[in-house]
Image (tube, rainbow, N blue to C red; front, side):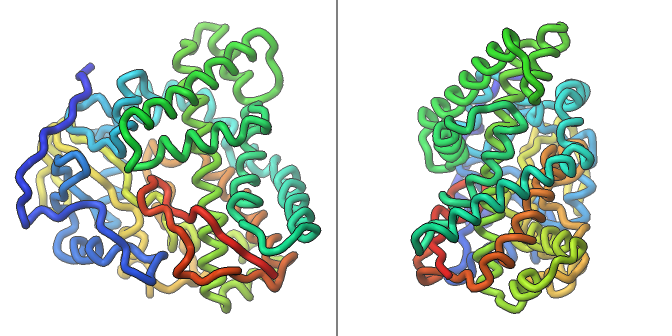
Length: 412
């Protein structure tokens, strides 16, 4: 195993653009103009990352799918030039890695423990419970005062309640894991802040594993604890798996709920389609299109090449870092006609918002069901939903791994 090191800063050369690039003012749903320019010039190019390193940035849809499916491209953060997403992110991995930061066969061994809990069948079985959660929260919104801050009152609550039910985490602890997840995902948090947030979550899940070893239930973490007792997992692996699911299972869906709502409010003709339909196929299609259009994983997927790999007319050298930009691939006009137009009736199922290959998002089936229930319920039950402030005053998460909004004041 290679020790994690940070690549030394290189010279500030004009021909290596800084990444990520800022979004254009007034265009919060579109990829940055600088990213579009880079993609137009070359499908794979060098960029300068936050730590001064110069990983390859992949922007072409076909190259991205090819590379993400290539077993030669590694997700292992222990390689020296792996492009760490945040300073705290890399420091946390000195203390242990979750399975998404491993390669097969270790990745597959750990993933298969929890994968059945995120199957299509399991996600569908949760649909009635998710519908009950969404309806209950909307009842509370309608009975309470206006305006409402939708992130805190609804968007964060839905996936957090679902995740707690699935994992066996007490919902009373939601502020703890929401706040630490937000800090863990912040690019401008200090390494110390990021490490503390990561270790707080890891310690929390380790204690939960201990509790389930002593008193198992019928939740996912009880199954993980059973594997520990059977000698199939170490307790550290169990805690790392739990912390990964806790971090990844609520923030992404919450940001999709809030950002989708804002995007639909800015596209009233698209919102009207959802508001007026109960067709499950139209609602499911809207989920795929909003995933494509918004692509909240805004800085891309980090990888490293343990050996030379040729792609997009370039040779990615052995040991070099790679960033796979999902949001620009999902705006490729050769794949999606009029890609900058939100069209919930298009077939957007080929998008890469969940990644691609063996590391594709584990929770995508559950996320789809949650979003289908929200999109099929919220706008029909509150048909006059509207912003309670100007778009220019909405605070966007430009420095978080998952793009979204900090607040979304709405009324009706």
